[in-house]
Image 1: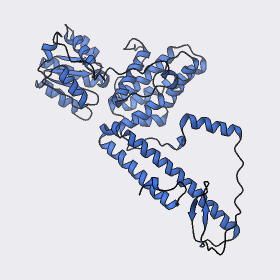
Image 2 (image 1 turned 45 degrees about the vertical axis):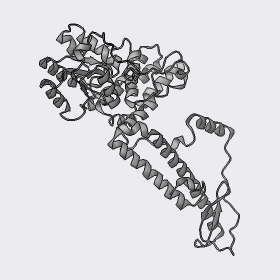
Image 3 (image 1 turned 60 degrees about the vertical axis):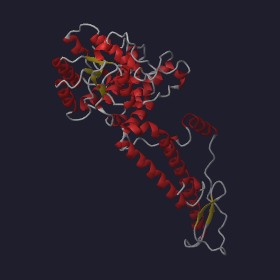
Image 4 (image 1 turned 120 degrees about the vertical axis):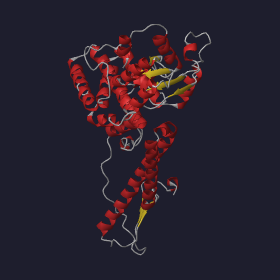
Length: 427
């Protein structure tokens, strides 16, 4: 049945049937994405279409049900038997409901007393809300338990928005409100549904943004709110162990030069996992173009023949560990560095790290790359130790773009590096 073929105030049963079909289609798509999260990007337009269709039908069902209720009230007030035929008009004048009232017994035109008209202030508030959030925004549903994790992450990132520049007091307040909203108990339930390496990035981003605010000049009320927000992170991290989160302790120092740069770094890493640029908050969008994550460099050229480390990696079988394996990025790296092959196995799940370590120790690979933002310290340590024991060149890289991998290789293979220092560089 085509939902679009049912008029806005048509038969209630027909509307309910169309609504049920739209809801079933939406849930089926979510189940499909739960089985294969990589399809989230290409199915996002379809998800939006189904959500919009379901919302529209839900509103039309409400109008039809309201019309039926009013007819029922008229019938009861006039003493008309309930088994006679009734016809009603919806708000737009079209037929909304049909029952069984005899034509020889017309229904009285008496209608229930209408409610008081909305005040000018109420109308102004409604218009403002509709302009900001769109019609029906209050009916949007939170991700269901079957929602794929990329869609959950997208929901969370839309809630907090990208890191703000604190050039105005308003921006500071907006940032505090966003961090507060993103870390409520309800939102923390969504954190649990992210893969472990994504939890680590997400919490690191929130902590870095909170540290930025803590170092900024503020008043007492702001400090109290920040203390409350900051107090939510350690209990959650202790309960769910997402891995090392820099900034959780006062003695920690920023890794990218400042907490603001750390926050932007983690935001870009999260956005890259979704394979999209998230929309900046309005007051920032006019100031700057969103930064493109270094992990997404389709146009970066291959290594030039004179690159000093090319002979060391060319023709070798390599492996990259960490993050969410993506075939286009894997192929691009394999081609750029002229690897004989490049494997990118997932290390999420029981014994997957141990399996990778065993292959490294057996000499399966000639180059080992560890994606620092996506690998926990306890995962990185045995991987690096296995590469050292096997005498295999290895490097810690900041992202899976060509430039990031090149910098990592130059940093770790371009000269001598002590074992103790390398171990401490691991996340």
